Image (cartoon, helix red, strand yellow):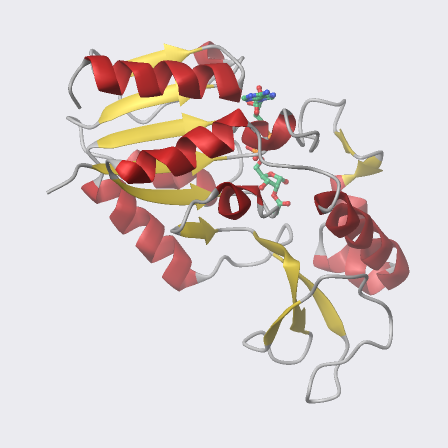
Length: 235
Ligand code: OAD
């Protein structure tokens, strides 16, 4: 039976594709304060600003491509059972070929009803005021904003993936946003943990000791190192 790998990713895995991270730019995200664009209050205050902001993010997806890190992660499926649990709302893991991806914080290419959150639709272009669900309510980005609950089924399946993992790769996340950042804390003590992040040494990690490999590099170089290590060590 093939070994199980959990990849837990954040904005840093997409940085080399040209997608900005959240906390590397003086608290601003694409020139906006997070609370102005990524909270229910922001939506209630200025729907147009929030729609425009996510329309720009959605348009940006057409201009960016998976990088070597996404591709290496997808390539792991040749030899392992791989669960990708991502905080990212882009679709770069899927476009690289990963087949099991859980998006804890939603997806840019989906929208949902403001009156019934189970009504979720695929969406490619801009979302505008007046775009409505089948019940006649305004549609909103399918993003988990600050102060909103995560999908409990997704959280559960992510925790299960962590508990069962033989190998965990944390890549490109500050591990600062909860409850998402709890997920890697469900791995077992004997799980091999790789942490890829230029700031790897500063992160608060789930386990300590000989099974932890800190790789203070960018995602693509770090993933290359992990793939080589797995091959050389017969994992
Ligand atoms: P952060 O911006 O908090 O962290 C990004 C991490 O990536 C940092 O630790 C950087 O050091 C690292 N990094 C930067 N460039 C990198 C590269 N080229 N390769 C590898 N790592 C790199 O992003 P997240 O941890 O993803 O939520 O943030 C978590 C959540 O906070 C996001 O999902 C988002 C945000 O608010 C929502 O929008 C709901």
